[in-house]
Image 1 (cartoon, rainbow, N blue to C red):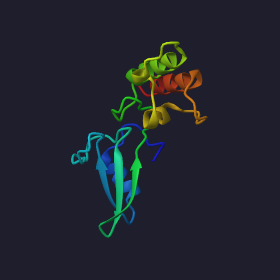
Image 2: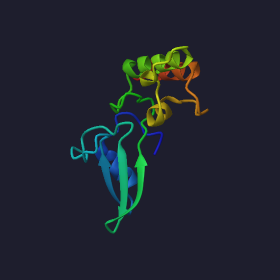
Image 3: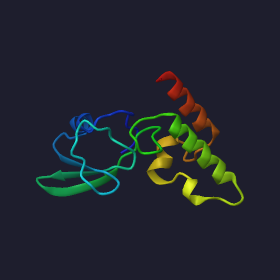
Image 4: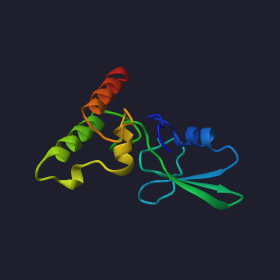
Length: 130
């Protein structure tokens, strides 16, 4: 599930998406999200059930949230820039390169790659939402 807005509470997310389904949200560590006031974060897992039976499992992606906080700050911008630089390095440190849901969160122009245009878009978003 992509394109979720930063600072969306779990409660608001469940209200928006849960029509006819039972929804459970889990942190990356596997613990069920109980505090509905907390934010939905990139890489959380959503399990959809109907009549108690699991019908789907989805990874959540919050736009711009590449550090898994549910918000978008300069920390996300820094992580994005480091990831791009590491990807271009000869001796790559794979642990610094964004992958999976975190990569999708900052592919803001939706071209399947993270690059300088995504840095610009994220910077503009942060500047407008301070």
